[in-house]
Amino acid sequence: MRVGILGGTGFVGGYLLDALLAQGHRPVVLVRPGSEERVQWRERCTLIAGEVADEGTVHALVEGSDALIYNIGILRELPGRGVSFEALHWRGAKRAMDLTVDAGGRRFLLMSANGVRADGTAYQRTKYQAEEYLRTTGLPFTIYRPSVIFGPPRGRMEIATQLYRDIIRPPLPAPLFHRGLLPFHAGTFRMAPIHAEEVADAFAQGLEDPDTIGKTLLLCGPEDLTWREMLGRIAAASGHPRKLMVPVPAAPLGLVARLLERFPAFPITADQLQMLLEGNTCEAGGGDVVRGLRRFDATNLSYLASAV
View 1 (spheres, helix red, strand yellow):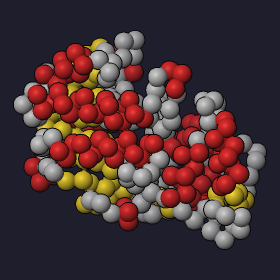
View 2: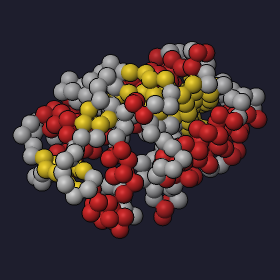
View 3: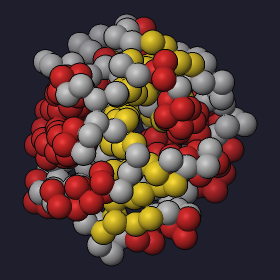
View 4: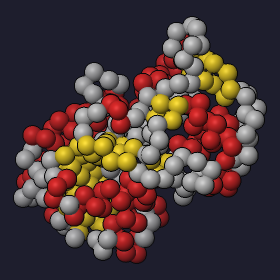
């Protein structure tokens, strides 16, 4: 099967290519001009140069594919570069869906996120809009909502590596964020980290499984971990088992983030902090739960040794 991929050059995109090729599929990858070197296995893929905002380019990708995967996602906006949640999570996804309908209704797999909702952050709202629109198209779709995704970064941004570099490696204590002024629940919000290979395998298997059509799949790892537990495991895996952790009220940091988040060097946005405090597990509901097997532990975080 020829599988068109929008979002094949990033962290999860590389793992998607691995899984698709292992299943015998032929990836067709949309690539921004000049980014061809970012495509893993490019000698085994068909590359289409262009932007997701270019209808002609997306049309060529759709016409040359038997199924589509929309995997484009960003964690923060860069307004000065025209990078926004609205453009990439919503308008780009809608454009791809509309062109897929026009081409005869090919299989469509959408990468969404756990916890999306209509009244959430801009990230959550635009992902939610894409989900809701997809359900109206009549396409044979599957929506995937993963929790946080980890695994060897292979030169891309990845959650455990980023937390190591921003929080564990610096000499300052690690922050245990909490709402309000009193630290009764500091660092107790939970996530369910799932390995990137298991996310990619879920996509590849979904292409072959008609039972996933029309479903929303919640992808989580085998454990729900608190923020404190996640930081502790990253610290241990990277050789900092005695890392000091202290409660930090989120409200003052949120105010600072609102002022400084427009600068890419500032490590967190106010919306990211809000979503962090909400937690991210499959208990949120809204779909069928798919649990991975790989634990967020020293064995599966061994790649952090190369980040030290």
